[in-house]
Image 1 (spheres, protein in one colour):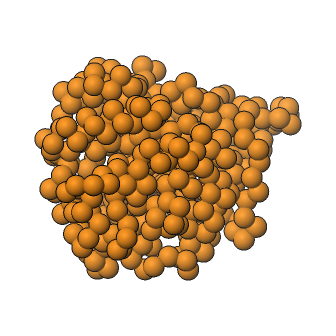
Image 2 (image 1 turned 180 degrees about the vertical axis):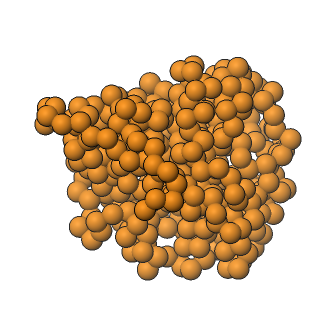
Length: 369
Ligand SMILES: Cc1cc2nc3c(=O)[nH]c(=O)nc-3n(C[C@H](O)[C@H](O)[C@H](O)COP(=O)(O)O)c2cc1C
């Protein structure tokens, strides 16, 4: 398990961290990271859903040494949180994804590298010894996808995370307003030469890139294909409907992420915490279920785990940490969240994260403060 990395003394919670990061980033970068689709109803709903459960603590149990560790697809992690795939980390820090991966490793967890990282998947792998997953978008040109998959396997990534909730780019109005683009000098590191890199490094928008390159015709057949060509465990990210969860199991996936892309794709989508219980039921233990979207507190992690998530993925807060302090900033965010998880678990009276279940929660009628 990792050495403890001290959380930055300058914030008490991850919401404050966002405000600190805002002061460090260009307006364009901040709006790109913080924003969601259209009216951002889903973005807010992801957070609000955590208010719909209260804890029912137990007392007089020995909680002097609570167990926080778990595994994700067989990899040990210090507590049930994994770094979510997010694009373009050099918007936040010159060392980009290499620093984030190092910080994740210091924080004792898995780093998920995005297809649209600024650093190449090989540089990320060389730069950090910690466990890593590779997030994949399927390109119209399947040979691009296949080559990415093979490179990820060769570089030692332990799993593929296939993102399925972005057949087309969501309507992100903040990015329309700022004219979001990759600043000069930044490229997509996984495509260092050739047409993809030059399309992405200049003035073309991310939306155009997605429309030109990503394949909206992907189906479950492609999941089978991916398992075959990669030989790696496959996690499908972006499932909300229980019938899709059942299909994922039928197609032999190793895990799925209940996700709405952090509220960045279809607005008015169900909040992920609200979708979780039916997905867990449908999967019936046949693959691991993860969740992301709006996790900002240790208590959020406990609620997701109690409802059946193996672990959560954390997106934006990691980027705020990266903006403020590179590798140390990322490790600090994870350390902070882990400390919140530990304190809350102790007061909840649960000796281990693995013991959490619905008996620790009371559903709260919506609208109650
Ligand atoms: C700036 C940003 C970039 C993202 N890029 C990707 C990506 O490249 N691939 C992907 O699967 N998801 C991407 N996501 C979605 C995240 O993986 C994750 O689903 C979401 O951020 C979780 O919500 P949270 O930020 O509230 O923790 C991105 C999210 C953000 C905020």
